[in-house]
Image (cartoon, rainbow, N blue to C red; front, side, top):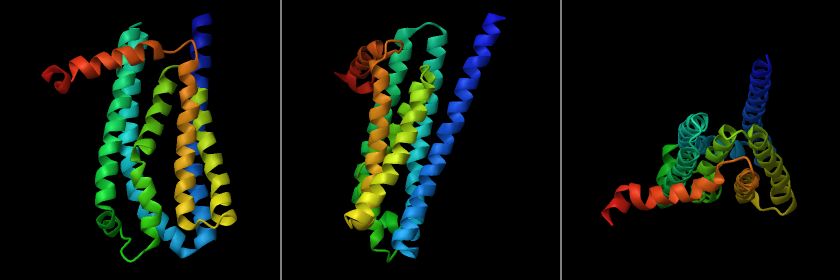
Length: 235
């Protein structure tokens, strides 16, 4: 009976925080649409529409690495394999950062072609918005990865808090950068980037808590990077 009560309580906590996290992601997109639409009219909404495929690519890799990594971390935690959980945790983070750097390099190099491909030909403001966002691709990919990983490490509230913080900070900085400092469409992009960085900083608080797998994460991940990858085996 006690075990069933614990399971039901844990299930409710995870479900509620998962719903709130999803609502926060949707709210972030809604906020951007409202702010850009009011500030720049059709041009602002067009820039946001052109950027959507890029966000989809970021989310594709972010949720792929995050979901895969969180499943393996949860499996290791269930098997009481702390080293395994730490290794999978670090692998997901390493893959997300490396992929983000690769996308940032290619995206920055071929930014005009990407804008044309997504329907932004002739839209000058698109480069001012997409340029900084493309350059910080690792941030946009790492944020959902960390959110899912710490949720699997029994910290769903912090995951929700990070997403909420990113939405609120993005909204406040949009108002400051666009309407207060007249930074234009670049200010909107900067607000989005700082919002994502803020979420990562909130997620990082998880590593300072006692009941997590951070202690094994770094050392097991470091061993995996040095010895178990093809590059490490080559040396």
